[in-house]
Image (tube, rainbow over all chains, first blue to last red):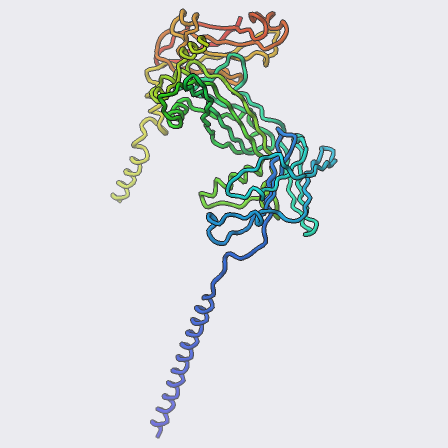
Amino acid sequence: MNFWHGSMIKLQLFRKQIHRKVLALLLRLLVCIITVTSCSEEIDLYSESDKLTAIYCLLNNNDSVQYLRISSQYTIIGNGKVIKPDSIDLTVKGDFIAYLSETSRSGEQVSHHFTPSFSIKKDTGWFPTEALQVYETRCTITPNTIYSLYVLFPKEKRMIFAKTVSFGGGVLVFDPAMVPGRKLNLFPGEDFYLRYEPLKNAAIYQATAKFLYDDIRDGIAERKELVLTLPLKFGDQTDIDFISQRISGDRFLRDVAREIAMDTSVKRRPVGFNFHISVGGEELALEIKKDLDAASFSSADYSSFKNAAGIFSSLSHKWIETIPLSKFTIDSLALSSLTRGLGFLTYDEINKLDSIK
Amino acid sequence: MKAAFYLMMGLLLMVYGCDPGGFGNTDVIIDKYKDLGTLDINFIYKIQGIPEDRIRKVDLSLAYTSDSLYHGLFFTSKNVSDEQSLYRFYLPPGTYYYQATIICLCQSDSCLWSKFPGGQFGLRMDGGKIEVKKGLATAVSTQFH
């Protein structure tokens, strides 16, 4: 009897254990089903959102008129390279007031209101020309002054704002200098150094050198140019006397040989060099750095405005026109192994040509 | 222990073995100039009676003979700058003649009184004979009397 009773208790305990195990298994199964089914819903990464206003305004030291470009930007769902933007989507609708405010050293504020501009010929291309909203204001930039840009949307009770400090002055170039008789030497073993003064509040410098030459066909000369772009220079380098950028004589001949096509029907006459230096403010430097860093996957989105996209910064240009070439530069173009097939005239041939005229 | 020793030796060979001339490729540069001498020209001027910024450098050229120098037949020339005074040439050993030219930009008679022929835009030249020796540096300073 005792044996029977003992067996019954054992059986009941075994049943309870089985019960618990089945319950635990069912519970696990339920958790799995919930986890799997709850993630089956697709997440929409691209959804309709409000358009973002994009503003571009670069204060130009060299100009008495300042320009502002305003447009809308939005997310394209699908292949953005195929879907052509519509002017309706890019245009900023509704009334807005845009003005530039200049704060003098005494704290006084002077405002310059923007009005629609029709003086700039609009580019053709991918973006619809009618969507390019360009505005202008008559304002000569005072050096080393705080400028604020305001774009006010009264109906939406929204204001876009950004601030920048203008450059300390214009670009001062030391070399090349326009000195009577001084000529530019650029041949193997002789490099040229472009030297210019760093500007206060500037952060990016881009210099280009243009090699000018004439293509002479049947006695008629046609001016041509070869652009040599020098590397970008970054940084507020006001602690140094000048920024120096090297143009290699060897590299120049290699570039000429690579870029200028051989043509037996033309004679070529070297004319000289033009230089162009563009200087940008800190905001522009950050924007360009952002684009350069994009390749390294460490890009940070940059905008001068908190509630809009775009740039409000300063820009200045300096041009140095037609620096003549030395006899050695001319002869190396005509006689060097790299460029002698391009039809460049020697120094003596040019002199002969000029004496006939 | 032995393996660690050989590993260390291998690493040391890899780091130092291929650079007998020191850091980088200085041996290539040394090779390029080993048969040449150096000529350093200190292109300076001090002209009395004219502000420093009204006198500018025009040219610094080298000729093989005094006759070529006289006729302006130079074999090389440097890019001159008012921000730089020292100019270096690497040349095969031998005798050379240099010519340094400055221009006066002052208006009125200032240039004429400072011996610039023709007054404004007048040129003054300094020239000289120099010996360049293999592996040595020759230094010369311009003098405008």
